[in-house]
Length: 119
Image (cartoon, rainbow, N blue to C red):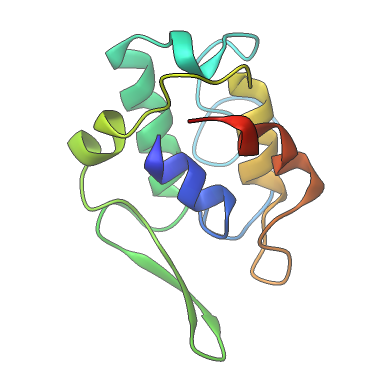
């Protein structure tokens, strides 16, 4: 999903913060962590999109990282769901780890590597 990927590249939901723990806005999306991103139902995609974009303040919002760098959330849930990857061996847990590791000073943490093979 575009929002998830965008977030991973400097965004997610990820409002540039990190946290541990269970479900909710910071720790996990609530979607089973072992599920592949390319096998998600539309409802699961929507849940991940909501979680990811919430990290940036919500759909249509952006995170100001300073020095002219901003990280943009998706414009809408529909846009995010529509841009979900159709081929991706990465799992929900890997996507969540990426989003949780991302900060304004580390826009592409090592945890995001599995997501770069998605299309």
